[in-house]
Image (cartoon, rainbow, N blue to C red; front, side, top):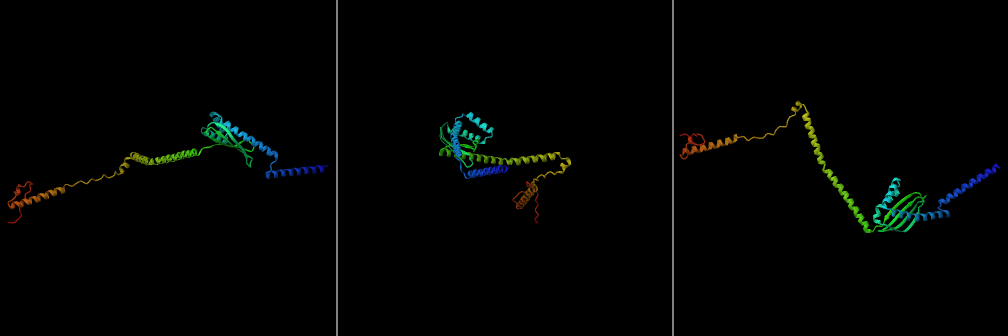
Amino acid sequence: MKKRITKTLLFLLLLFSVLLSACGRKKESGQISEDQQRLIAQEKQYLESFAPSFLEDIARSDESSLSERIREAEKNKDAVSYNGLVNFQNSRERLGEFQSVESSEASQDADGNWTILVNAVFEKRKLLFTLGVDEKMTKLTEMSFLPDYTMAEKLTDAAGNLLVGMGTVFAVLIFIAWVISLFRYVNLAEQNVRERREKRRAIDAPPLARSAVKAPPEPVIPQKESGAEEDDELLQAVIAAAIAAYEEERGEGESGESLHNGLRVRSIRRR
């Protein structure tokens, strides 16, 4: 009897293991049962109706309610909701009032995560709303708001961003050039500090040390000698006296004794 019970238990265990392996092979091969297909279809239908309602609820909320949602998402550290709501808040003025929903389509990837694309119409332009949900449908994985801008608006935004970027670069370059121009004042300040230190050291030094320090020699200014001028005047007087004596001998000039320069000239010619 015990042997029959043991054989029966072993048979049931073997059958259970075979069933488990068969289920595993079905799952690996990608085959889905009808119940699972029906469940996936229900989830898709639910998400395609939930995403437009979720978008409309956000779009029709006033500014204070939207700010409260953003603060709540930041408090809960929900980065997906926070970034998405801030993005919508920044684009709200360009979108205008919510009008209607054109379409909503949900798709599931290989990991079981859902992505819902909602095309909505606002007062000023259309909007593509993307909402991502995990496999268990308990957590948001993506939330983005993409307004449909015209080509002219895109070019205008690009030009504005370019001007802002170039202005920022030039401002930084001007600031760097200004900082570099201040370096000379740093050198002057260091030189002044050095001179003050040297003066303080000279004042605080003992008298012997101060006397030992030789003062720089004063520049010698060359003085003009007057001897050369006197020699020139004397030579001129002698020449004039000689000329006068020569003329006296010939009887044409004054007497040598009456010359105005005070010199007496005698003739040395033999008679």
